[in-house]
Image 1 (cartoon, one colour):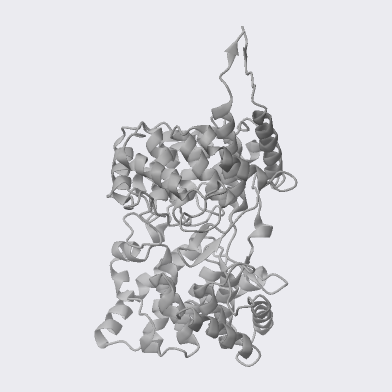
Image 2 (cartoon, one colour):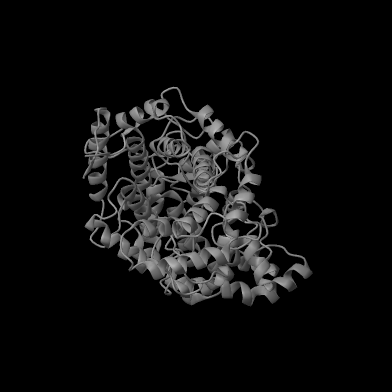
Length: 564
């Protein structure tokens, strides 16, 4: 007796072809080491260039004059016609990016770039100035740069309370991922910002702890001269240390790193995303039947290699995590959860130890409230968590690894998620633009644990149905046009929740119409670099979401196998 599929609907053939072509288009981006490499689409960064220029100006203005001139020229060339800048050139102007770009151009080239600076500041004024930026953390960074160029008096720059470093646990929870940058800039403020005697005395006592945090990260990454392999982050740290006159070895190493990493056109990148590109590519491929494809063996081995086996001391993180880049990168629940889920879907047992260590890491960093943030347990930083979407990524990874749905870790997370639902039924996300993807992700997790009939899940379904656009696609739920990423996520979640496939056909047709020559899909900047302020695109995410949606739709409309 054999089982065969009988497909009376020719549309399954259309889907099969689209999936096969889309998968092969993805494989074209795979390197021999298993990385699905989209660096050519994601390297250029206004913020990275701004960070590098400010650091070089403060740390090595004469010796790096050639780099500074090249970077300033690139900023002038990439200014938008409206006077603003975006994190990635060519996108719509953003307030935070425009503020720091215009300030740094004034800092390094006040004469030659005067027109561009004036145009950038005019754009800022037209858009409400710094006060209109919807993120207090970004306003704080911008005010630092405004202070560097004299647009703000030192006493008006936000103070980073270095004395909190006297209590390392509290310091981590209050500043999270920003610890190295806050520490370095706070060290500079002790020397440049008016402080009262008590503040100054406490800050001086805390200086060794603050400098220790900066050095711990520096040494964890191999003392390369970079922090997070990211020119924006490295720029903030180097600027702070140079202005403080401290740690000359780290400052000199950063200057050398900037020289090594500047593109000939005059720009610096924000950082590689090897793991983030690859995990979404492989996840999409496994969803449509490619888990056993031998080409994915290299990617599975890559994930095992990228897992980190040393604690990340500065953030208080145990070993066993993944970051978004290399083997010395910063810890991330997002990447750890997604990579764990992928490893659980791939054949073989060579990744079993990596899965076990990843499960232990997620268990140890779960917040006491049941949620997960980016990496620091119980963080109080809004831009790092607690995050509904990050939380379900962690929960899904635990479930994929065999943790039962009634496990205490899962139950606590579900309770927190129910409490985090917005009044209209949607969910927020820290790292993806609101609200479609987060709502879809939470819905799918509730369905998976057998709670599709919970009020939380029903309200999420209702929100997704309301958020659908007239052409069948989904955008962010707040008026933006449809994207492949959001449409793919919404269709996948609604199918998982038992939606009638016929009712989703127009969305599937929209995805098919969006295909590009060669079988891939276009991508949009739907990933939050800094929430509400700067966004970027992950091409592999778009391809993976499209494949996932088409594969699930195909499975939903294909009749069950018959026995003959």
